[in-house]
Image 1 (cartoon, rainbow, N blue to C red):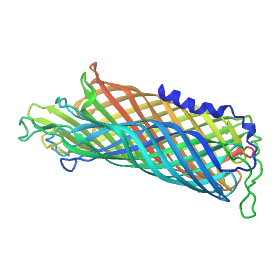
Image 2: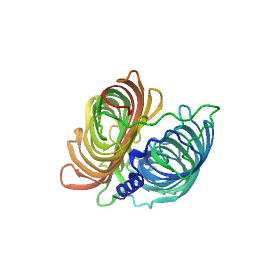
Image 3: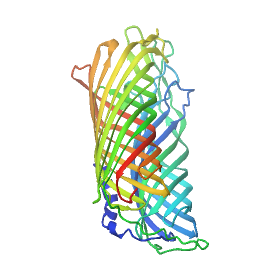
Image 4: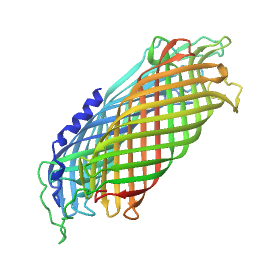
Length: 547
């Protein structure tokens, strides 16, 4: 609930500004400004292995939402702008993966990375390519993040964890588009890349099996190592001009005035279709019985590659500002699945670490529906907060099996791909809170950006280890984010084409599995990601002058 409250607070300030004020024909970008933003990001935390090359893992994916504010100053000269900006965000970004898995005879660790806050101090360079109120800019400068990385040896061997937290420094580059929508307010969509230098920490002590398959485990001392991090972030924001806002006409004889933004005068319905191509991942962490999720007994990771499919969508904008939209789609893909286990006591062997790989057939289907209000709208923009619902279903079949790490464990003799080994059927249901901004950035060219926070996510699933006749019902509750951007070109007044992308991520903060359906309840963490490239065509019926 903390994230829900935070996002609502960041929407409260501009709600008092009347859309009717959005009539100023030009904008002066000079001077101080302050604002806020919401968005989401994906952190990639790379952990160095001090023991040798890893069989699997070492990159922890940390998706999550963030919200914060910015303060800056602009110097404008004609169509050119220079600026300084500082921003800071609260973040809720975390994830897990395997670390230090250099051998099937070593008990590797569960690494969990978390990012709580981040910010930048940047210079901005921009220009006004089309009119007085549309700014295209790039930015670069310093970046910082507050985070934590914890590593715990798996399998319940009782070795202590290692933990490192603190502030990490790096650099950032990014780009965005900002448009003035009232005499003081602007709205922006921005992408940023943040990179952070290596930070030292200690890999925990663990255990090694020098005489497999039945040899005793012997201790291995911990070692110094380091980790680095990259973050991709997408944000929607609004700025309030503390000075400036008047007409500025230093354009070498050309006026900045683009004419007044006229409110939309009619109801419009846009319908269309998209080709979807992309990548997805689903992974789940199985904790130790009655011990939580710091150390794991098992992890399954499904990487679904070359996702290909289609979807249909529609959006209704009424003359009085109500907006309703939705989409429905489906796709399929191939891929592979890694099934990891730690410290298994088999009758004929003791297994420090097992990692089998299987082929995957994957099918997804999804739909969502939103309702909102065009809070700010004019001839070149709409800004629309919304509330909605999303559902995402995924059916994955693990085919065949071969061992990557320990020849004394499962699939030491490979199982052919023609044999079904594991089935995973899951459904995610989520509440959506977010906003979509539609900005005309050039004649016939519109950029749409959308950020949705998922304050409540419900997960249900079924794991069927077919070859073991082991069927396990799964459930959980959590959170997530859904981001999307689309650049579209109006071929005619009604017909448009576009390209764009999306990123969806959902994960549980409280999950369990009924292991084998026996009533043995064990803690689990479930996480899903989808990244799609989109190509669309759309047709609009009716409407006024709004995009």
